[in-house]
Length: 403
Image 1 (spheres, rainbow, N blue to C red):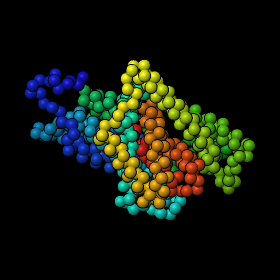
Image 2 (cartoon, helix red, strand yellow):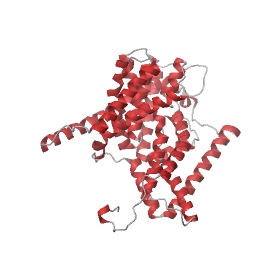
Image 3 (cartoon, rainbow, N blue to C red):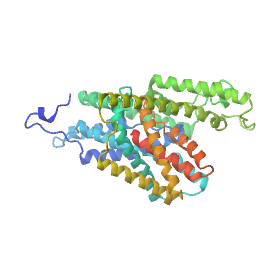
């Protein structure tokens, strides 16, 4: 149990927390982990929380150095927390648009952002998400229905490795062994001998029912757990085993005759919107019920219903809004008034994403962006920049807020 400063002995040492080496270690580990998140985002549409990996790597490096040198300061629990926070935030930067809206913008318009404008844009949407999270944080932490599985897993791991250091070394060896195994398997599958993909029938293969020997998906299944995994399986069976055959039978979707492989693109256009609508509407309903309950409780207690924001966060929030709107106009030629409409939508969807992550640990960044695209497809039909960048603003802010 952590003690308060008033209960500590007079000359008790204070643990270092925001040290230079903790921040630098987090930055370096984040740089190394970000490409894997980019690859996972492009392949399966999800990114991973790199907190535990960064925690184990930082602990292994600095504790190992401390044992070899008596003069070297030990790697404290608080430094480990700063390290994993910096590294996981760096690895989550891909939600700023690096794997979906920006590549789509380049493919559709033929215009490619230079490095500096791209950095400025990704920073702006992430900066907006930080201030949205600032205002969401109290209500989310006070909601007992949200378990925050990622954060709780990181906390348990952090406490465990400092209570039982030998287990941290064992976990680090397992981590390195898994990394080596997955790297070798991917190398063999890509460059030497392609592993077979199996499907019971050709028809089921065209409906994407195929066994793919991917360790990426095996690892993802291990992280999300049996409850969420079975829920995803049920959704896949309903969509691809129920709706997809019905769409083909009714002639609403025509599969290309020349191809015998999976026909994902032709079917997902029909299956995407029911899934996104179910997820987002369910989360919005849950959020609305929670806010209504909070409103009633506050009124019953006679307290203030609205809390006046402090000057510092309010200024930061306004600066982030000005930055996002200005860059939409300068970089993509979007009307400023239209760009301003993306802000309330981003706030609403960031709240949705934060609650989804708090309940399941899975960030619905892709779905959030697609819902934003649908909204602006109605408001500004046929305008590619506003359609994509509204999705980028909403998804990037949601990704930053959930981090």
